[in-house]
View 1: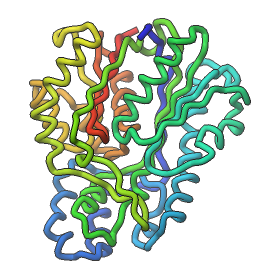
View 2: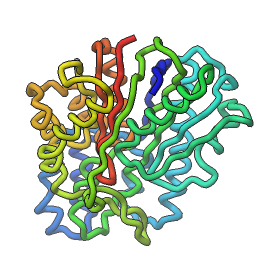
View 3: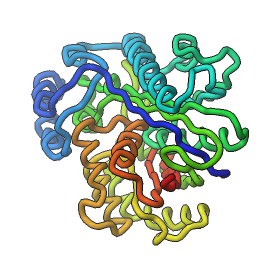
View 4: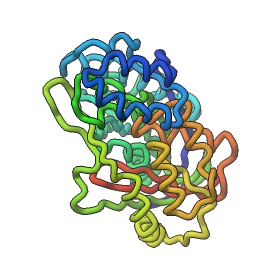
Amino acid sequence: MQACSLLSLTTAVPPHVIEQHEAKAIGRRAFRRKNLFDKLSSVFDNAAIAKRHLVAPHEWYEAPHGWAERNAVYLAASEAMFEDAAGRAIAAAGLAPDQIDGVVTVSTTGIATPSLEARVGPRLGLRSDIRRVPIFGLGCAGGVSGLATTARLAASDPGTNWLFVTVETCSISIRLESDDPAAIVATALFGDGAAAAVVTAGEGGLATLKGSAEKLWPDTLGIMGWRVEDPGLGVMFDRAIPPFIEANLAEAANEMYAQLGIAREDISRFCCHPGGVKVIDAIETALELNQGELNLEREVLRDFGNMSAPTVLFVLERLLERGLPERSLMTAFGPGFTCAGLLLEAA
């Protein structure tokens, strides 16, 4: 991939905030399977999450909702966060909305047809001839894969400016009537949020995007994803995710280094999607990182929970604020089971 400049990066969250102790109390009160909840309730205490932002007040989650209701909440909240994050990203890049030539939208927690950028673009002032690339199905890997796709599109057409937006409303999939233990884990982990960035061909800006790589493991479709069910999306979380990462990430990372034309020692810091505290631990073990080296990932998990695709961009935002190291490798795991990587260099 030809080098691209990251001109801006912004994040957005919905207005409702819930403390972890409140989420646990609501879960205990509202979960249908009391014995299952009591058996697994320690996940709230061990998740290393203090609070999360949600698209609806906590009373909404205690009531039953079908597909139509859940998706209506997704659309309203996603459009609002898209407009907020994208508008600020365009301004931070020093551009006007009509200077954006293309937009990549990544979202996997609801259905939008017409897609989100078609709904929000006119309000933002995007041109009617803008090139649109909506992407569904990437899950937690979407923050890295989506930004890499945006960079490749910008690199293929020098002189154009591309907007990337990822927005997820994971919390609308919380299902208090479910008999699946993964539903309790989701209730303890999920938050909502969005992120946006503007990229263009060339070097400079906040950082230079130098290349991307991806690893898809065969026969791993059941590790992570969504089940499409009548009340709404049902989360698939396999307990094997952390040990799988611990056992397989190092080899996958070596393959990525080769694709990117770098060596392990060339990387100053990893910038990882904090899917959960055990996932962060597994990454540190697999990559032989010092304990606490992924401190920003733990901070974002503590303050926002797992927001799926946008989460790693919240980590990158904090990394940029503290000063981007010479060379960083962004990584995120997602359904497939896959690991996406993106190489950044300090401008």
